[in-house]
Length: 342
Figure (cartoon, rainbow, N blue to C red):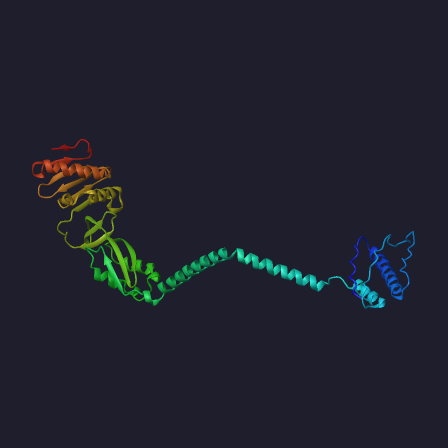
């Protein structure tokens, strides 16, 4: 007898429908088994007698399962059908395995479609890491003895002895260039009054360059100690017992702290080198009556105040080229637009 096909699962409309459908299917199986037994015995096949009116809680119709009659006992067929009905549903383990397989498949698809983006990201991260490592290595090397100061060069020294200045900064030898102590450098350069300003420049791997700007002397001021050489700011550069040749004598009312001295210093710094070399004396009682004396001819240059000093210097230079001091007693450039020559 051929093995019967398994019964289809009944729809779970309500919680009480499944047991009813199961009982109705069992009755159909039993009836089919009785019919098959009768057929094997040679008697006519009888149709199962169903109640016209289904009982309370029973399904109105029940499928009749035909059983094949090939060498199988009715009881065995019924038992097989009953086992098929009693098979449990899909369990939690199978559902969990299926969900896990689905997640793995989704991850594989995401990785396949984002491989180019991940490669690009890896390239950028590698480049950034390389730059950071290079910067850290450079900073570490800069602050190491590999970049220690071994040579100090002095640039801009004309009146000063460059060797003396470099010797005063010898405490910086051996220090890494970024760790040079600027306060110590300033303290050492203060000992040189001629240094007006300075700047430090590092030349890796081992050279420290000190660029200095020397003060420009404007004249001598007579004091009790002798003759003091001063610049336009009134800073004393040196003192000698006798006046040095080629340096004008400053006769200023109020001393180096007065407005008259500030005006005279600004006038001297605005003069061209060829005219400054001819000045032997500068007098000023106020900031508005600066007067220069040219040596040899004792020619007076009435300058006035320090305003428009650059223009006055240009006008004076052109006027002296046309009318030399030998033939002139006074140049009045207090009004540069109208120069008076006497």
